[in-house]
Image (cartoon, rainbow, N blue to C red; front, side, top):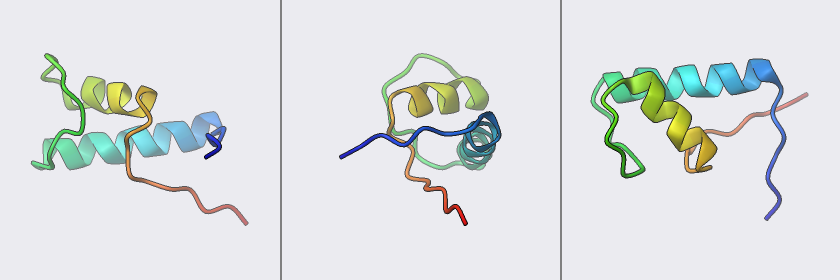
Amino acid sequence: MQTQVYTRYERARIIGARALQISMGAPILTTTSRIDPLEIAIEEFNANVIPITVKRR
């Protein structure tokens, strides 16, 4: 499986959407000691566990 390279805009959108999900009560997909949804979303993004895909034209 090949890891996709995201643009900075795609990365910001993915992390922002995931942080919103976490703040609304979605389960956290990694083990972390952080409590800020944005920091948790960044950790999940770096661990490549966020279940969000990007469709390009």
